[in-house]
Amino acid sequence: MMETNKVILQKLKCSSDDNYSLAEKYYSILSAINNLKLTAREIQLIAFTAVRGNMSYANVREDFCKRYNTTSPTINNIISKLKKVGVLIKDKGKIKVNPVILLNFSLDVTLDIKLTHGEVK
Image (tube, rainbow, N blue to C red):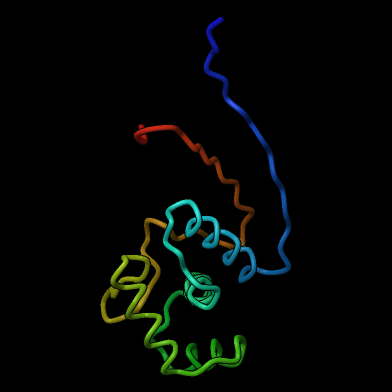
């Protein structure tokens, strides 16, 4: 007896308290699916940057440090790593999230994730 190709559909739903936590969930999923192995702090920085627009201004960095209880040198190290992997980019002198993975987190986000065997088509 031959087994037919079956597609499994599973719907998941979760809510978030604010734009930052919604963005953190989104970037955590992207990290997991793409095997980026991002740390919690790296995901927080990406999410914060996505919501705030950039990480170039001193007041934005200060807000991040206060919100996540971290330091400015830590931010610089994380930015350096995330630029190397292409998650963050420098655009007109500002550190921003790569537009390919940037969403408007003030809106609801629906993801359609397809996990396949073999090559991605």
